[in-house]
Amino acid sequence: SVKTYLIGFVLSIILTAIPFYMVMEGDFSKVTTLWSIVTLAIVQIWVHLKYFLHLNFTTEDGRASTFSFL
Image (tube, rainbow, N blue to C red; front, side):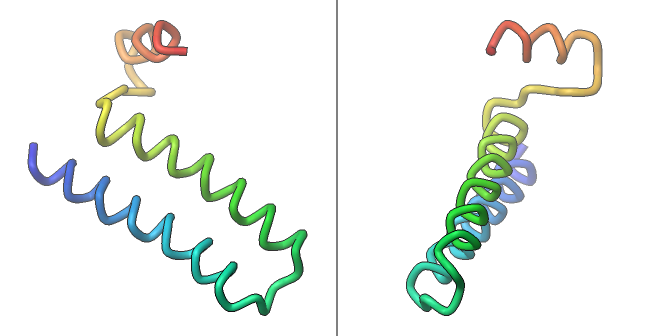
């Protein structure tokens, strides 16, 4: 539905804006910035899998689809 795509889009924008802000400001240490980028990238991968590819992680059928994807 449009709602799930909108939620995924907003989350993707937020998960992109945070690391971009951290890099542009330069107020954080390099290690903190790097780990934040890696962590938020992993979260963003999950958002894309859930909201755009519609992989369901909770049902038995969804787990099979997820394992097939991986």
